[in-house]
Length: 469
Image (cartoon, rainbow, N blue to C red; front, side):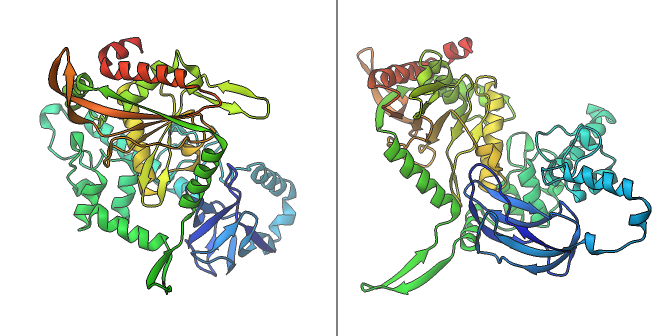
């Protein structure tokens, strides 16, 4: 039979996307769950799996097309068209198998042990490497990158167990210290990551190391992606030549959300300055003793979390239908990340439960995923409070827009030396300007000021703050 495959619903209110690429050709045989295409939504770049076993007959969507959920993008002939005598000999067994397949509404097949989700090619690779997929702990389907990373870690641990520390060869585990997205980049560039010397802490191989080995730079790669992802055309206006650039899905959705936030929630922005000299000294004293890249953001997250214990309205949202303030008892903070596709806001879960090193690891991982386009929609859904750091690029103060339906967002300026009066004497101190935008329907000016005072106190006395956690 001929199956018309529709663009699937990826969840979270996504109604349309931009079709990016087919991974197969017309006439190809495909397996159910095999990744056959990629599309970009306002949430992320998503992989589209084949709905069934069969033969691809006709593409109904082309790269660059805007596609809506439910729109037919592919025609394929499924294996139900194939007649066999065996199907009549064992009807009960076939019926049982089909029922089992129909019971899986995830779009991916599962193993008998633990209902582990993975594509057929991942299962085949796991079988070749002798790995039980149930041993890989993950909340979603297991990707090829996760499997390869797990296999490399297992191999590295086995190597360490089989050799003494006295006989270690420098660089023999090179490449094992790299994130999945960096490994994927190396494979895309045709490079052996074990031959790349890492410039990160503990010899970690970074994106810049892979690009340098490939004879490229971050800027050149970004320019290539921008040219690929944005359609432009030059036209003549009454005043001269202009270039018109199509807005991608991320920028359009960001603009739509910002417009809704700005005109739904009455914004007020409270600004103040923190003397973070002690924080700078504390970070400098410990950053070389840990493997993760420790920025100031984990400290700011903890400072906000501690302050929220006395000001719970900052970690809340407004239920406009019932006129109730919904105070969240969990702390999942969104962070703004600048990418070549536009602004993304991945979610750092459990800020209250993670220590500084764990927060640094989560931040590094999600920023890397966001910038490389590997981040999933689930990793950006939800959140209770947002932080945006313009200081990493430049700038002191600004008026950030609330990440609606949240009720507050904290903006960070750059940490810089400034002349401050301390006990009647002028001293050079490290300071940072903070900008707190809040929904005035939920938070009044006095509460915002008290919250900011507590955040500043936590940043100015970081050791005391850490004792409270």
